[in-house]
Structures are given as C-alpha cells and as structure tokens.
Length: 280
Image (cartoon, rainbow, N blue to C red):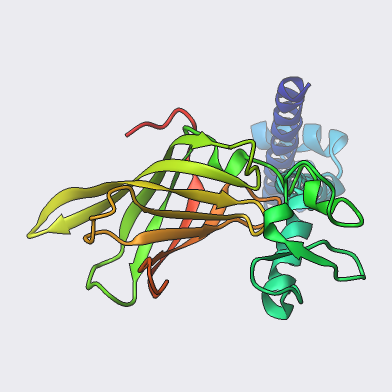
C-alpha cells in the first residue's frame, strides 16, 4: 500500500545520500593525500581511509547517485501531477465547456424554452421539462442530470462574496444562501418551490453585523435557475436573488442581487456549496 512504499522510498533516498556524502569525503581525503604525498599512499589515518575508500568506490558513483536522485524528484513531481489530474471530473469539465459555448452562441431557443440538444436544435416549453413525460425526441428533457434536485436540496448552504456595482454602496462582503425546505407538486413537477434564508456579513461603523431575511421562490429545471425573493411581500429593504447552476455542477452557481420587478442587476455573487457539517 501507499503507507508501505513511503518508508521504502525514504530508506532508498537515505542510502543514496549516505553514498553521496561518503563518496565526497573519499574524494576529499584522496585529494588531500595526493597533495601531501604525491600519490595515493599517504601516511596516517587519512592515508588509510583514502586507500580503503579508493578500493571500494568509483568517482562515478556520486554522479550516478545524483542522477538517481534527480529521476526520483521528477517521478515525485509526475505523481503529484497525476494526483491533481485525478481530482478533475471529465464529465464536469465537458459540461463546463458546453455551458461556456452556450453562453457565447446561445441555445437558438426563445425565452422560456428548453434546448433538447443534438443537431436538430429542437426546443420545447420549459413547462414540459422534468414533468415525467418525454417531450424531446431524444428524451433529453427527462434525463436524470437535467432533473437533478441536488442544487436545492434542503440543508444545503452556499456561500460567496457579494460585489456591488449598483443600487447600494457597500464593500465586498460574504453572503450565504441556506435552503431550509422544498416542495415539488405533482400537478406542476417542472418547478421546485423553495424556502431559504439569506444572510450577509456587513460592517457598520466599525461593528460587524448580520443582515438576513427569509426568502421564498422556485427552482426551474429547464435553465437550472433558482429565483428567491423576500418571503414578506412588504419587505422593500432586501433585493431578490437569482442563481444559475451550470449543467453537471451542483456545487457552484453564479448569482445576482436584483430588483424583483425590473430584474435590474445590482450585485454579483459567485457561491459554492459548503460542507454539510458546517453550521452558522
């Protein structure tokens, strides 16, 4: 196992270092003896050591040890790169590329329509997506990945930094979206109704404070969009939230703070899913 290989590698490196040091010492002793006696047969302890080492070691040993150590270093670097490569999910990477292409080229569908994929560029109403009936010719509207409910799973908390560019004058600050409950109605399965808490860590007159409000809204499977607004209809102090999840990525979203009526964009917020055990 990996635990057994580490001691072996350490022993091998230690042995090579010993050989390298001994070889260097032998070379110094031999050079010293040559300078004093004009040859390799010096007297005294240095001469004895020099002769002993000269019988057992080749000067090329040090060079070989250096080459081996260099190869070991390169192998270790390759192992690190392979380990990092294992963390990359190929499927997620492809979905991210598709999402970027779609954002540039568009889906060729009208608003409130869903792109079925493929070369036909078929579009259907977003009301038909994930309604338990195949409406796309290829059934893409009922794919497990499209109809994944994980982005709005109750108990999930997403956090990120809010950056305001309009509406309010605020420094960048941390915000959190906590999904507290969901409902999916049988007569309207293409939406998930969501309850959430929205928090922002603000600083006022040098004192830290938390601004929060209860929110309600829905998740649309067709465009993987979460829309939240203040649960209190008379709450004019807080802005609505729109979050877009890329296909295949349930842990990150690009969000915006907007005015509900006009959808005017006031702030950007890139969030990521926190660990389940994290609490506030």
